[in-house]
Image (cartoon, rainbow, N blue to C red; front, side, top):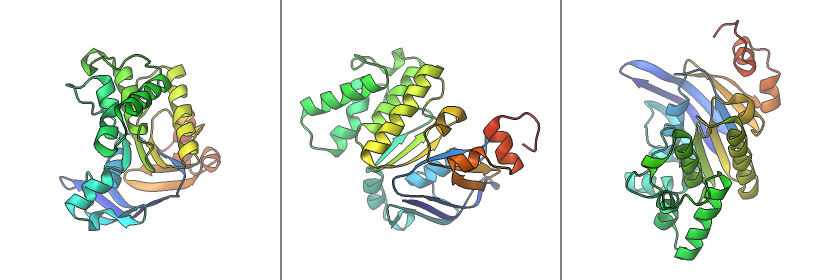
Amino acid sequence: MIRLEGVCKSFGGVPVLRGVDLVVPEGCLYGLIGPGAAGKSVLLKIVTGLLRPDRGRVVVAGRDIFAMSELELQQFRSQMGMQFQNNALFDYMTVGENVAFPLRRLSTLPEPEIAARVAERLMRVALPGFETRLPAGLSGGQKKRVGVARATVTRAAIVLYDEPAAGLDPVTSQRIFEMLRGEQRESGATALMVSSDLDRMLSVTDRVGMLYKGELIFDGTTAEAQAAVEPRVRQFVHGLTEGPL
């Protein structure tokens, strides 16, 4: 489970998160939505411990992550799967080495098993045979898919996705979301996802939260989000051009 209690974060005196209370139940695929600059990516980085909140508490898998020492936090963070909006691939590593990196760092799997897991991940994101390529030779969408493959290769209990389908064509985007949902169901992982591709993301999520100007203005099931009457939620979910946003 992921729980945020009264989380606040400002940059240069400008509030980005304003007392956010959020619970992602264990085994849930949770979608975080909202307009640009609402604080979604900042919230993900706080959950990973990469950013420290100004105020508030963050509990992940029963542990207050900001009560840990730096070493404890690094070790705990290694148990999460993370896909970042900018992909964060190592330019000097091949695609196969990038995807295998968490396995080589965190596991004692033999190399043949690592190679098989990498090949299976790349097949699932429609990049079969890309192991020897370098990130510099990939398109933006291909880099995104490599990032997704790396985030899921360890089958972690907590997985965070920041725009996993950005820059992808509709068919590949749908394939990515279905893959992430399949992974979550098979592993029972708790997943927190940010995406601007609302239609496809909402086809796989269990629950949805909406951030607006740094505040969580909605939290409920996906069906409740789609039926919401709150004007800002309704406008955003259904892509209406007239409204308060």
